[in-house]
Image 1: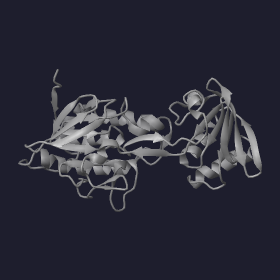
Image 2 (image 1 turned 180 degrees about the vertical axis):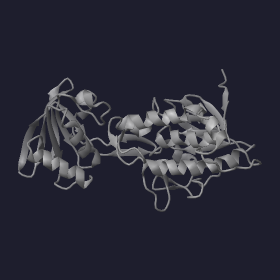
Image 3 (image 1 turned 120 degrees about the vertical axis):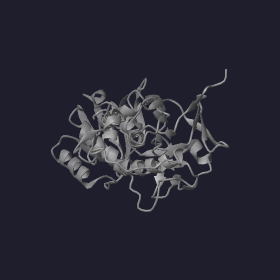
Image 4 (image 1 turned 135 degrees about the vertical axis):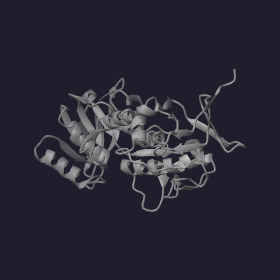
Length: 342
C-alpha cells in the first residue's frame, strides 16, 4: 500500500515552545502547518524534562510551569488548526523539481511543502548517565533522570547528584515534599545560578537537608529498589541511605539525520542568518536552540523572536507573487477574525 502524500505550506520539525509559537506566526499569514515530533506529545523539553519546573523569564508571565507554558501555546495556536504527527522522526528530505521539499519519517509518512522549519531544540536528547555499575537495573524504579511529576517523589528519601542548575533547582523544589533531601557533588563549586546555591546552603544551615562532597561508586538495593549508595570522598568511602536517586549530569544532544541533510553545521548546531533565520539551504529554516549565530542566546523568548522573522520569509517563498502587508493583531480586523476575537 502506497503512503498518501500530505501536502501543506510548511513542515515544522519539532513541537516544543518555539515550534508551537511558529504555528501562530505562520497562521497569521495564512500558512498551514504540519508538525513532526519524536516525542508522543507537544512541548519538547518543557514537557518531557520539567513540566512542573517554574520558568521565570517569559515576558509578562512572572512565573509559569513548563507544561502550563505548552498548554498556553497550544491554545494560542488552536485557531490555525495545526496538524501534529507524534512519535515520528524525520529520516529523509529531498528537493523536488518544482522547488518543494519532500519530507519522510521513519513511520512512513510523506510530506510535501515549500518550506521546512527545523525547531528541534538540541535535536534528540538523552540524559548523561553516571558511570555507576549496575545502574540500569534501578532506572525507572528508584533512579530517575528527570522529574515529570513532583508528587511522584512525595515522602521519598531523595539523593540528588550533580552541580548544575537542574540539580540545584530540583533540590530546592523537591525538598518540601521529600521525607529527606540530600545533595552530593564532587566539589564545593557549582555551575548553577548563585541564588540557587545560596538557597541550598541555607537549607543545609537550617538542617532541612544535607550536602556531601564525593562521587557515587556503588548502589545498594534489590529488585530495582535502592536502599543506599557508597560514596568515594576525600577522606575515604562512606555510605548514604536513600530510596531515590536523581542524577543530573546534563543532556547529550544528538542531531540524528539532521546532520546528513547538507546543511552547514557549527559544533552540531545549525548556522543561520539573523534576517530570516534561514540555513545554508534556501527554503529550510532553523529556529530555537538548534540554531547558532553571533550573539545567540538559548532562551525561549529568543526562539519566539526567530519564529516571527522566519514566518515573514516563509510567506514570500510560499506566495512569491503576493504582497505582504505588515499588520498588528491589536488593530487589524482581518487578523482578529483569524483569531476568532473580532
